[in-house]
Image (cartoon, rainbow, N blue to C red; front, side, top):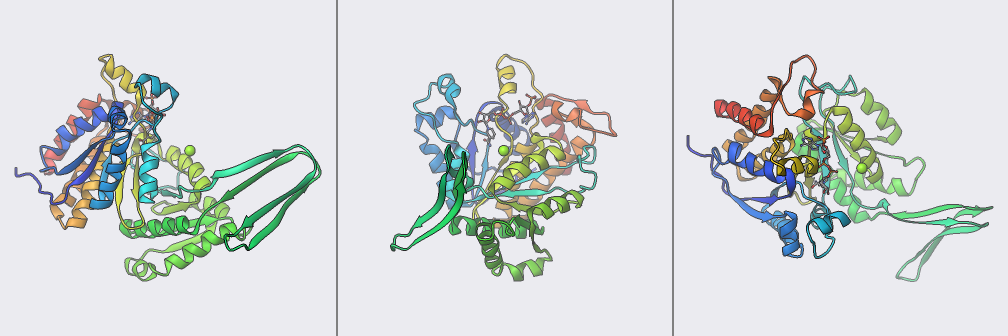
Length: 401
Ligand code: NAP
Ligand code: MG
């Protein structure tokens, strides 16, 4: 069989630990035999980040801006323990944080669903994608504990000399205070990323805040979304999708009663909380995909889970592991599909579809990794090691190609 051709390279970001092992296995078994793979390779594994003083992460983000599509392996975010383990020069920032701030993007998380794993919410038939605004609010707030009566004020001193002031509270005794912010620029980027991704997925988008209470703060989010939507309105109508705004508590109630199949855009805190609820209710972290979409239309695909350290230590001891590669495979297929769409390569898009179908067929026949075995219902699962599971997927893929 002739290998499927690519024209523009994918930006490939390698990573750490068990997912780095899976990364190579996936390439060897499921990609290199079938695709004439073109990538620009960046090694974001912790040893190379340390060697390059994290310049490699910056280079990879710049390459993503240049080429438009990247695929990333999970990476370690160093903490004190990792400093010793890897003998690091410094405690580098999270690569995802660096890439996200350089691309100014929004992260969309979607569960991969199969019939034998039932969502905890019985109404859910289709995946729900969470889009979390990743800047500001309580995550960039300052707070104060007060221990006596007094007046708390919110003061803004403009560069023009104009000031604005509001009384927060006249304390009669001890209490707590918090100041937080967001910027029009960040909210506008978030809105663009959401509407672009809705068009790409051909799914409606919901957005919710509490603008009845936070009239100015959340009101600003709502107003910017409404304003940005005017640019997308006609394209939404053409595709037959809608932008739906409601209050956050109403959104939660509607999500629970919905069939799924839409994107739920959330403010930073709501997204933090709701993405864990949605991913757990759908099944497993190992079945959750993630894509960073920048407002100017660059895409970086990855799995939502981390480097699966516990499994890696077993692997180092020579033990076989049953680590689930599905979300990492879907990161690759997502990147191939987007590359194929951008470069007008229908064969590459078809390969991405067939690779995903091969994964789902394998799971639907009951072949699974350990994490899924206990979740599957109405089927007798056969537990495989990662290597056996990938070999099984390859058989399906070979048949369909
Ligand atoms: P994790 O790697 O997601 O793993 C947590 C646990 O979830 C695992 O021990 C495993 O449970 C289960 N799990 C996750 N993915 C799985 C898979 N593909 N197959 C089977 N089981 C899976 O999270 P973590 O242990 O908190 O973090 C490990 C490292 O990853 C950290 O250094 C962190 O900085 C990094 N991290 C990176 C990213 C990223 O790059 N996007 C995201 C999160 C964390 P059992 O052990 O019970 O089998
Ligand atoms: Mg969280």
